[in-house]
Image (tube, rainbow, N blue to C red):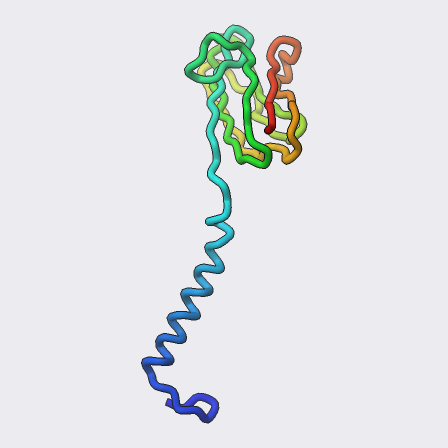
Length: 135
């Protein structure tokens, strides 16, 4: 086969095309491979406080996260007769109000700057708030 006046074997041409396709596919997948995994944290609301699932002894706990980490918060309302929501005002992460026995979720990127950021239930802010500690 002749390309631009040069004789090229079909095998060499097939290898060049396969290599080009592989390079393009790898370039397309790199951004997806570079995304860090999402860490899931389940919070329960009960007795007008937040609790991390599995720890019923620490109300409104400090949640330690890494700067820039991707976090998925799952909120489960176990407070019969109450509506609760969840918000991290510094990152605009919110879960709309949910009723008893319902769940909601939000995925967000933790702020890049280390420090303490408040999380809260907006209707019950005076008693339902904790700290998202960014390291």
